[in-house]
Picture 1 (cartoon, one colour):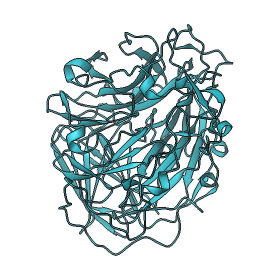
Picture 2 (tube, one colour):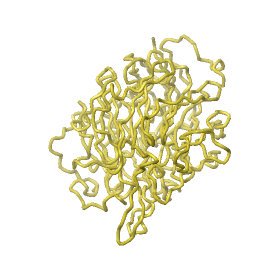
Picture 3 (cartoon, rainbow, N blue to C red):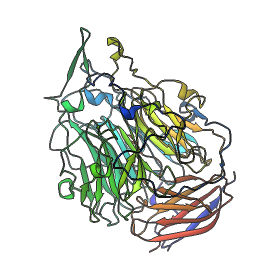
Picture 4 (cartoon, rainbow, N blue to C red):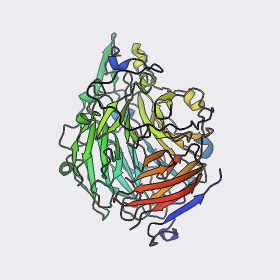
Length: 603
């Protein structure tokens, strides 16, 4: 679609509100059970941890709007035209980058109001070949699927996105503020930007190249870290896996010898990268001057950008593999200090570093503060850090029911969404191992694993509800990325999931809803055009919901830009307030449920 075809492009609106109403292996074997690894027992209240901070925010008790119907999802990717097969053939030596898989992401690239789907592709390991090059018809490529009112068409070729190479992460946002979302795609040896031309095509722009060969980058996230109105880019770097000295791991157990994926501690970790947007389409590597290289490098996998201390600027949380996680506190000028250890989020409550595969930041308990949820390795648990305010967090994984169900899973991608529209954010986790041969030595750690789905019980506890949710949740998968969007525009949130060497899945949400919905699109004018970093508060009269606009989270994935908010049993929305990244405040009052709201930042 040409830029001039956009009805709203270039209009000089000031604080305009548009409202539309819509009718209704080398790792150690299983450790002994540690004190914090006790099973989750319904009704059990574990003793408080010494040195942690009690909750001070009051809880709001409302009539439970949830119906008795369970969650229900149907896998429909092939049915709606998403034909994608991930391709990452494992070598006999089990080269590490081949098992980590690729992410998946949503973006409305043609601005027609329907989210399109980008699937990142792997590649065979061929040392010495260029990292990215135009693909032949026989080569697998990343694919872009155009959403045409709920059905999808492969438009990769016409969009000029056909390239071979190992892609891992994706994040979409409008980095040049021209009204069309652009892409960052990370991967093995090269990270690239794809600039949206506004006519249905993209042009490639390479980020500053790594100084070391074999760099493996994972997740990425857009954020305006210095407050200049332009989106900057944070990229997690996992390790240097150069072709001349690629670290391999030969494992011997029970007299049997085999190659397995090398442990992170055997790899050369690389510092993450921060690229500052100059506003002219060019990016500068400011990793050192920003402070993010001031601590020892770790094997970074997940990243989320959000205002974790509620001071008006964006912070960064990075989940690292078997090393301390980072919490980069923004000093207000685009420079960062790591507060992970003192904030209580560098390790779990036992002081142990975990796998840190992916991360979500969201207000799960309704107190207005953003909590952190991190997925981890088999025989660990996923970890939930409750935000106590003042940049202090408390690991309450077991108290809220998220420990035991994840103990025998290896979690990768995750989504925090209100799947039943009862106003509380639920959790989905895609699971799958990185070691595919453990059964050969008698280890009961399956490669393909069942996904997990958790219902948020009014901000107090999570209940695992995977069973009976649909056929996808009854079958094991080698899950990797997960990203949420309302692809069919029916008011509830659906999920796309990527799999290692498997087809992409699209889970249509067929859950009987507990209430209505509100969808919000944010358009910045002083702030970045995508509204990334904005904080939205929805007042339902006695209950306030806080949601944030992010661009890249989970494992190597990104959800759609439109916010979908469940409203429970509310019949009207009293007020919607937005705190824009620029600091501007905006609000709209007395809105109907089941409606779409477009908010344009006032000048």
